[in-house]
Image 1 (tube, helix red, strand yellow):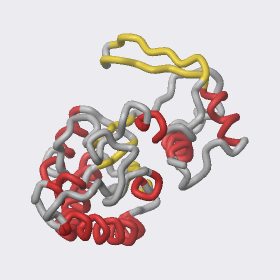
Image 2: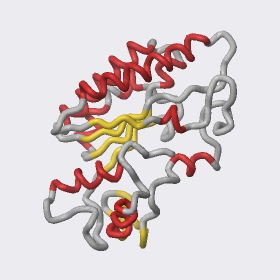
Image 3: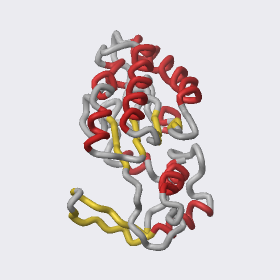
Image 4: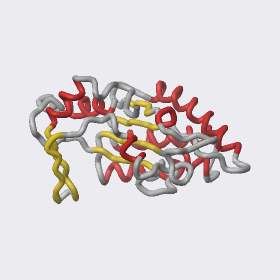
Length: 219
């Protein structure tokens, strides 16, 4: 899925694609998630995303929010869905062509007295899968990332999490294990901050071989 999003995003320049040889990717990716700063809520970030995208343009958003909204009583499942919809609308206001990969919310090990969190997570994930099919457009596609189904964490056991939710040092790389390793990967300082380059045809070869399949981001 992510490989297809990257390939289509790079289509903004018809002469460049993942099949190109040893070029710097034109793709601008923004990561919006709890992994960047624990405690983030989409109820907050929905009001910030338009300004952030206007000051720091991106072509693709990798979105992993929602747990803290329900876990820290910002809102219930329906309120969190409303916040996600507003987030997407505000992101599109800054970039009508923005592409999004939106992860659902994993369950966590059970917290006494928080049956509501288990229930809200189940409701939210069911609603998210339904609404993404309504929110996605040809101009601004949205893809569901099935994180809950592929992350080893549940109310009765969470071997993937060091604290009952967040991934251990071992499980962080496991989340992206199916993605091919880019060839000739390099990072260096640039006026934009940090620039990464890689051998793009190496990724495309592995994608054609089936290492990365649509809707198989995490296996």
